[in-house]
Image (cartoon, rainbow, N blue to C red; front, side, top):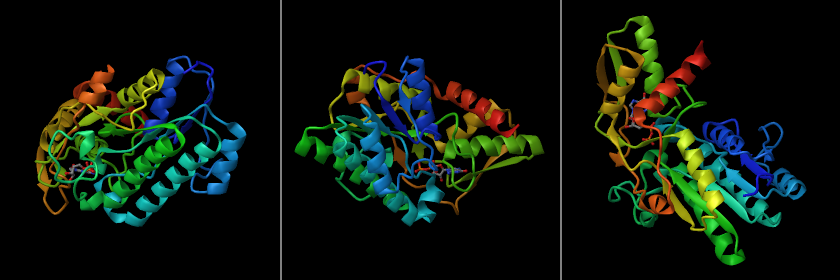
Amino acid sequence: MNKDAKIFVTGHRGMVGSALVRRLQAGGYTNILTRTRSELDLLNQAAVQQFLQEEKPDYIFIAAAKVGGINANNTYRADFIYQNLMIEANLIHGAHLAGVQRLMFLGSSCIYPRDCPQPIKEEYLLTGSLECTNEPYAVAKIAGIKLCEAYNTQYGRQYVSVMPTNLYGPNDNYDLETSHVLPALLRKAHEAKLRGDKELVVWGTGTPRREFLYVDDLADACVFLMEKGYAGSLLNVGTGQDVTIRELAETIMDVVGFEGRLVFDASKPDGTMRKVLDVSLLKQCGWCYNTSLVIGIKLTARDFLKQTT
Ligand code: GDP
């Protein structure tokens, strides 16, 4: 990528998009294109096509998506499938019409079958049934991967899909109803400490295992792959290491300094029991994560305090 290439980052106000902009700026890229939702509605096909025809970016990162934790995915099932399908179809087809050759589509590890072997290899895609709580989101993201693949095979485009594991970091969503587990527990621990509570409520049984990647590491991987000209169609991005939700909660309590005890609310769903990515392909490309879970949680806690005080 030339340093003055025109790079369109969609979703730049979100956790992933903002990390991509930070990483691109730090890498000396000077021509980064962004649009807020009020400036460009990605659900509007005509508006997206017109914008891409006018701007003709050299590269596009699709970090815009309707996202949320287990509860949001399960509750707003129609919004998750519809909005994600529209965003990716408008952007990917619009990019092709505008002659954009290089594009990166960001998905999620929940695209893989619920009961597939662990760690999860890219080749397990579409080999089994999906986890019910986030099936609409996953189906939309799988459609995005297939869109990219189809434009590559039919038209010779280089549209790459990367599947990050559970992400966390600055600009995360801390709303307890719709957030993912890490920001939710960070907030709960912080508030429990301030109130002097004796307990911290964790959803589910605490036994599911999840892998967590600091979002700046994801952004680094994405830019690394674009710079390298990676042309495969689907690539996992993660650490390859997982922890139980209980271990995660304990680490967060340590970082925050909350000394009460954990209580598990089994009326809330556990979701998939284990989700950890096989990152062999990514390692072969020459990339490895940098931020440990404890350091990442410390950095995120700092961002959370900044947002709330
Ligand atoms: P998932 O990875 O798609 O299942 O999404 P989440 O990050 O929302 O949830 C991961 C796991 O953490 C699930 O087993 C949840 O039940 C569990 N969990 C524990 N406490 C919380 C919480 O306060 N919020 C959320 N979102 N999940 C929690």
